[in-house]
Length: 477
Image 1 (tube, rainbow, N blue to C red):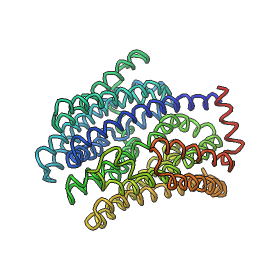
Image 2 (cartoon, one colour):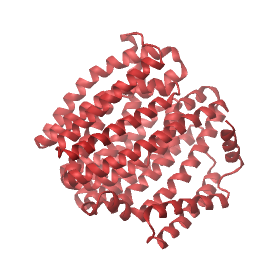
Image 3 (cartoon, rainbow, N blue to C red):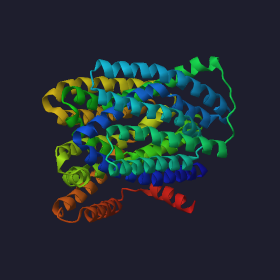
Image 4 (cartoon, rainbow, N blue to C red):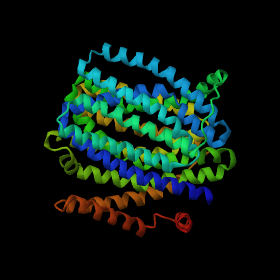
């Protein structure tokens, strides 16, 4: 139960910080999108998409590998810090050349290129921040990472309000990412020096080849994931223009905000799952099963509720200029539902040293995504891109579920069907309420719908004795 307590503490810390930071990000998106307009917001979103993809090449999975290995053996900390930092310095220069060539060959206007370059600089700074957060995550000291997320969001929102007040242009908003990530790096550096040992330099060039060989599947998996996450925005910019990217990205950013729940749990649970792989397979299977169930309970009503309320959400957040984003949100939110469901399988595969398998799955999904986007974007524009995103995530999660089954980490199919039936029934009751009482105040409507959903979940006994036992133990802790 000590391990369960640690997960609960870290998850709670991350949940609180992510709720606060995502609330701040929500207002950041609201103000930036309204101030820059659909086209300006499209340019900034394109820069974030491009640099996010290229930024993965700077990290190359080194941070994820570092979490796994340091969680298992703390004596490796200094060697990983020293060598990872040097490897990232070299990788950052190589990736800069690739990014420069891409934006120039693609023929983007000068303004777009400058925005991309500024945002890329912020991505580089963040890549080195990940070294410190990796150690903190491996040591299961997530409260410091949580404060980091809040600090970053506060700086972004404050800077945005300042930029709007002084009527600054889009280059300022791109530079704001550099400022925010620089302050975040400074904070993490100081916390590490304060709470952890001063890192000793242990450069070992012989360490590089086996480390990169072990890390690259994590990096390539992340690259593939970001490619099929952001490639649609890039393709829309090249085929349809930045205005369409703005409409699409507005809904996409809102969908991404909902992922703070699986993201927070993933960060908290990964070190434990990595240890359980070498100590207790039965415990690892139990965690996998419960995590999957809880994500279904949270994800499915999110899909139903957002689909019904999408028009209210888009008009409330972005205004009438973003009306085309309504249908995008109605489609894209189901990507989040599948992401919730697949979170545990992704973490499990990485925890049992099968990251190369996850890479293969991600590459397959990337190819499917690109091909489908090439077919649907020219004909159906942002609606086609939205459909492709959902289909890709559905294929990804299905394949990961099948892979974990083949690896011997089976979740009882009968339990899944039984729970899925109860959860869907509860979500349908909630949806009926939403449809009938849409005239109510939006926030009151959401609160009442959530209460009705969880009441039906309770009445249908979706939570079993094992769940009750786990919750009681957590409360006692």
